[in-house]
Image (tube, rainbow over all chains, first blue to last red):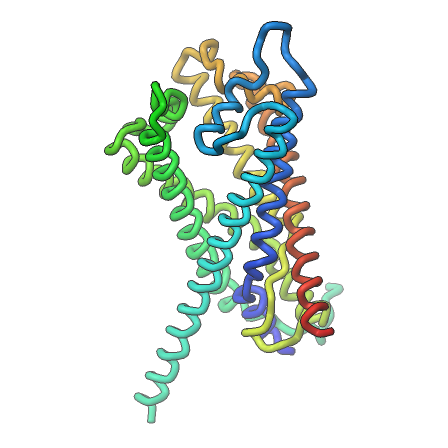
Length: 116
Length: 212
């Protein structure tokens, strides 16, 4: 393979949409799960509620709370949101690359025609 | 000295043009994501029907002048989110692109697919991604914390102080911001390494599934 092709492959390779969705979903799920569990493990003085601020996430994630059950619900939500973000990112990345390559090819054909 | 004379010469102009284009592209995607995230969060907060809409989200106005949880503020947030997202995206890709020579070398060495360009799937370099995103997260925490210190009232920043639950040693002070930045860098780096490993693993699995 020549070096130019390798450069183009490194810069213009297609992103695997499903793989990025799974990876982003998993990382987000682990992140929110760990954040919730950290607060639960650390605990709070008696009478003081745990994680009142993190618990505000239930504004966006109905059913979520800083509790063991809530950590699982939060992880599921985070997986879905992460997967959605991953999908959107990968699709946008691929789409813009395709559009750019199409533009380059059209321009090359145009200049080729003009040269003839 | 020590360079292999038979090694293919990389077209520097092409390499720079590729990195420049991808930087623009990634900045655009991150800008769009940042803008949409802040817009959606503001509108959800507004119309969720809670007694004090955006009580906490309003605190972002400390960092983003003009922003507040209101219909107009949502669009100011949209602009800020876009601006910050685009800047972060550009910096992140530039740092990530430090690995592009390694990627090119991998292709040349035949360690990666030699299929046609349209069939090549990107591999994520977790280490480079971790450095890029970790650096941005650390920089973000340094700037925001020290902004709170400089504008005064750092002692009252009880919400920022809550980060100490996750970042040991963090406090709303100059020294605390450095410890916090180190902590968030390490956490982000780790998450990116995991992200890269999962992504590359799924790509490999799907390839194996396609071939068999």
